[in-house]
Length: 140
Image 1 (cartoon, rainbow, N blue to C red):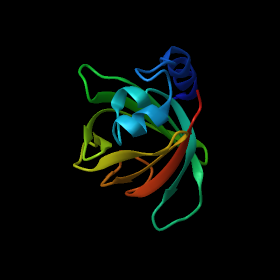
Image 2 (image 1 turned 180 degrees about the vertical axis):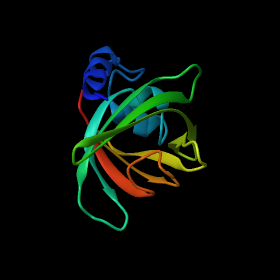
Image 3 (image 1 turned 135 degrees about the vertical axis):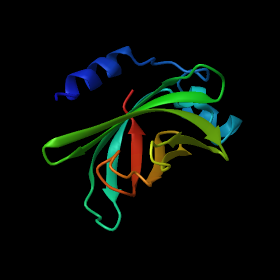
Image 4 (image 1 turned 90 degrees about the vertical axis):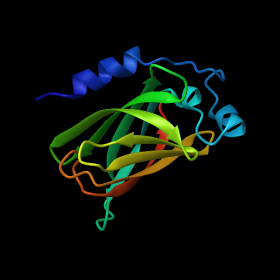
């Protein structure tokens, strides 16, 4: 299955602006995880625990159906494979939490104006590793 063309299409369709004019700094001032300010495309690297080898990760966040809700599409790249998960997330305890089917979660936090960090646990086959962490920078 070819997932990269879908990701490119999602990047083109993803909203560029936010309620804060596209500035994550405004999100950090107004709250640790202002869902509207996180909207956009992000790119970076993920590592699986206990393996520390960095691998590419792309994430697209769009507004959800209500305030404090975002839809995230995560594409974890491994050698020869792309694992894509699309989940609805909610702002919880200063982070955006995306539940995984088997009870695990992807959690995203704002580090500064240009970076996000996060971790995932309990993937049970939904992602390429059971647990890991990531760092992302805004792509646009």
